[in-house]
Length: 437
Image (cartoon, rainbow, N blue to C red):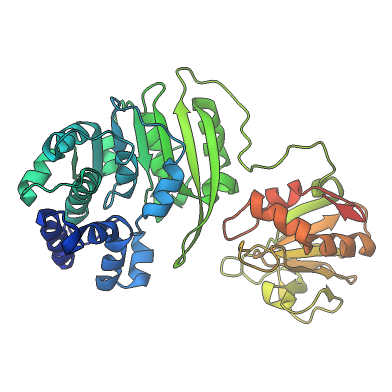
């Protein structure tokens, strides 16, 4: 999360509110428990949204995990009370709080906070986030013990010396982290010039964090994280997934659906254990039965449309030209009115085109049309072409009907929950002529 500087002064009133709550006696008459419950469940995020517009939060990737999601991820994990717990992108501490709920408490508040503080490590670049994380952990201890002691903000900071303002990625570099690594890193994009596992160009910052967490993890260290689904299913991250399979035991992959109502990103939870020795292993990233069945790739060649409108100059022979807009209402297209000059690959009908843009919330994941005619067609890169290996209009119509069935929808919604379909996902779809799945 990048905000101007390392301070968010407009968030200070909320920090002050939590500090006041921290010193309020824990008594039924003053309703302090219900106020603590609000502080532990989503209030930090709601208050942040009051001061920063939603579109800016999306740009910055400044969204917090929340109690429900954090507890869902941590539900089946048993905390080892002597092992450190590290969150390199802790925000206001949701994942650390979910872990602390599983830690034992002592007979008094001070010793509880001291013991928790010796185990909990967290880093964030925003001062106010770090301070809120510490206060919320203290509020959790108050709630569990049912007692309050009079601590100042300075004293609370001293109880958690390992939760501090710092760049989490920088802190991970060169470390050998034991115990448990927790993370829900930012999902914004970052230019990669270093990692061979991520390829060149813009990559998800979450993927950068994931790789660095694994590199920094000691043998047998656990990693539990929440990541955008594109890392689980996107073609761009296939090399990263192979590398993870080689260096980690993948204990659990859990589909979590949309991260938040206002955050149009599906996410998954990943539980890894760092191997002592790198060894190749097969991992079922998609949660689908690996049956020996006929798939789309056995009957159709699958390609991304070759025309990139903003990149390719209009030179060469003139061809019929189809874009994503052409298939909005039509299931079968016999006449293509638009043309353009193009020197690259064109496709001879019959074939099926499918929109690449696709969301799990769409009624149809694979929306498209059958293209007929005699002329070769230039296809925009926002479409995927599925060309039958044996030219047949009937085969194209059968395939399109199946792609738009509930069976295909259900399969895609397990296989790929990011906001686009890939060539790989369409190739792998179980399918036989006059049927499927």
